[in-house]
Each structure stands twice: as C-alpha cells, then as structure tokens.
Image 1 (cartoon, rainbow, N blue to C red):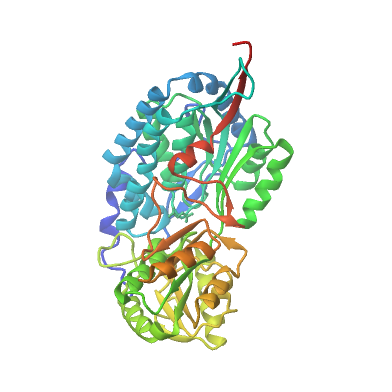
Image 2 (cartoon, rainbow, N blue to C red; image 1 turned 90 degrees about the vertical axis):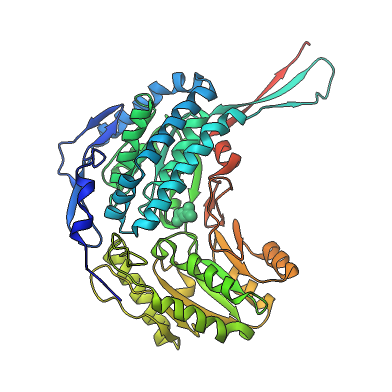
Length: 491
Ligand code: SIN
C-alpha cells in the first residue's frame, strides 16, 4: 500500500532551522569551495533540497593539518574536561532531536519514528563516551626482576579519519567521533554524498558545545579524492570506515603503506535461524525487526531466514500476514511503516533479488514489485533456494526470504556458508540449542530471541570479511588508544 498523502505540509519546519547547512566545516570554519556544489535530494519527493561543497584536496589537507595542530592540546586535556564537552554536545543533540530527526528523514528517507530512534541511538554513544574516558585505566604488571616497575599506559592514537555510510547518517559518525574525541584523538570525518547534512548539523552542535577548532572537521565532497588525501597522509594515524566490504578492502590497501590502524565495519548478510521450539510470536517479532528495521538497509539486517520445517508453515503464515500489513511510503507520514529506499540502485537490487528467487522456484507470500519512485514494497518469499542471490548477497532492502531446514547442523552450515560474519540471530526456547548455535555460528554478534542488538554499551563488529575492530563499549574506546609500556628500572 503506497500513500503520497500529506507530503508537503510535513516538511516545512526543517528549512527554518539553522541546522540545514550547505558548507563544510574545516579547521573551525564553515567553508565553501570553488567547484560546483553536490545536490542532496529527498528520496521520497526526489526534490533537491540541499547542497554541499565539493572540497578540493587542498581543503581536505587543511582539515588534516588543523587536526594535527589541535591534537596536542586536546590530548592533554583531562578526560573529564573532554567528557564535559561531549556531555554538552549530547545535551544539544537531545534538545534538537526533532530537527535532527527531520533532517535524517529528509535526506535518507527513513521513517521519522526511526529517525528519532536514530538520534537517541547516536546520541547514546556521546553520552556513554563522555564518561568512559574517565574510566580508562592503565596496568601495573608484576616485575620479573627486583627493582623494576612495569607500567602500561594508554595514549590517544592521534589524528583519525572517519568515512561513514548513508544508512545511519547520525549514529555512524557519533559512534566513531565520540570514542575518538573521548580518547583524546582529533578527527576528520567524511560524510556520504547522499546524506551529508545530518553530519554537518551534528558538527554545528559540536561547535556550540565547545569542541575546539580543528578537533572535528567535516570534509564534504566526492569519496575518491577525499579518500586519497586521508589514506595517503602520514599524519592520519587511523582510519575508521563503515560501508561495503569491497570499499573497505580498497581503503585497507590504501592505508597499508602508512601502516594506519583500521576499524572496518563492513558487509553483513546476517542469518536468522528459527527452530521448531521457538515461540511463534517472538520469532515473527524478531524477523520483523531484524529484517525491516531501517527499511532493511542495515549491515545487521537479517538477509537469510532459515526456518525449521516443523514450524515453517505457521511462521510463514504469521510473518506473511504482518508483512502484507506494512505500508511503504513517505517517511514523514504517520500512517506509513517504512520510507523509500535511498536510490534507484537500491530499488534495482531488491527487484533483481526478488525476480532471481522467484524464477528459481520461490513462492511469493506477500508484497511484490516496486510501484515506482524509490518505494520498495515489503515482500516475503518462501521456498527460496539456498543458492539464490537473496541468500548469497546482501539485499539491503525490505525483501525477506525463507529457506527451510531439518537439523541444527544443516542450519548452522548454511548460516556459516558466507564470507561474512557480522550479526546473526537465533530463535529457540531451548537453552542447549541457543548455546550450541551461539558457539558454532561465525559472527561477531548474536541476537537470541531478539532482532535488535545494537546499543552503545556493547561491542559492535564482525569477523571474517565483515571487518576489523569494535565500536561501542570500552572496547570501542580502546580502538582509539595506543598502549605504551614503560619499564622503570632502578627502584
Ligand atoms: C549498520 O548498518 O552499519 C549499523 C547498524 C546498527 O548500528 O545497528
């Protein structure tokens, strides 16, 4: 069900906000560029409503230089002083939650309800790391010989670069910038071309909160020339990236000559395993959230739903009913459940995966083809062949496919039959099943009887080709710290 009702009257407030910014933020200055600006469109109306400067490489270098200049003073501040600034930033984000959420919906398309949830989720990282740096302790190691003290201290890594994706325009930069700044690092962040405006608004609030000039710069423009400056720089000591495995591998290669530290949060292709003994309502709810959160455009989205054959028909019927009730349309319309997809390529991929599965024997249970624009109708397929594109590649859209299985061994084998290992989900009421799947499944995160696992309090990250490093929790802070071992003799 698609609705275009009530579109234009729900978009007005944002343009009055000073958080709609069309400049980059370099070395504490809001700046344009001589090149033609890059337009930002609304994925539902397709209207171009914003623009960003296409910075030159010299301007990106200026941001790197400013980050290097700002680093010593920022690193020397007490953790509590940095934390106080982060806390003010958090307060300002919460005070401007509605504008930020509208901005997210406007440039990303996701439903306003989800945009509000994203503001809370992203701000949660700033809240958490505002305090966490004060709890970052060193170590004293028992000495192997008399008269010595072996100490381990943490130091900030230095200037960091961040490259973030369009699917969570606020949360992804927040979970990189917050631990970096808390640890005493400075950062040059590049927002995605498709959704850059939220990051600029966040930087504006950061400036108001008192983040000193040069500590956080936002460089807008095209990925390749900006990425070249950031990856080649000797001054940049760490790169953190969220996005595709393909681009992550290219960035890792580009960072190799300067031996940068890397955090890479890459592709997912998450499996959801539903066992015969699962509670049906819990299984359906888990599938709804794990599949349709963020319109299916999430690295942790359940891409493959494996259902044991004893519960399969009941699950497909109940899940199919829910999916057929979902409405896709304008993210500003309360009556909708999900918004549009980000661009035409996203629509084409979902269509390709659906048609591939159907032509290879899958059954359509709910939904169907895109009606036009960037709307993708929530769709459920059953009897999906295990080798369909839908199970092999990340779909990144609201298309769910069910594959049946008989034994736990079959399910775990199929779940692990992928180069990826970010998240996985299991629904069962048997503790032994949960423990065995939790042990044998190859992923960095496992949701048990829940499709929502993301929180600033826990380490988010993957294994295999899903990436390196963790974001969130004290592990996320450590990603921005070097260890220094001091061997003190003559005591
Ligand atoms: C992502 O899709 O990359 C992040 C999802 C999340 O933080 O839950």
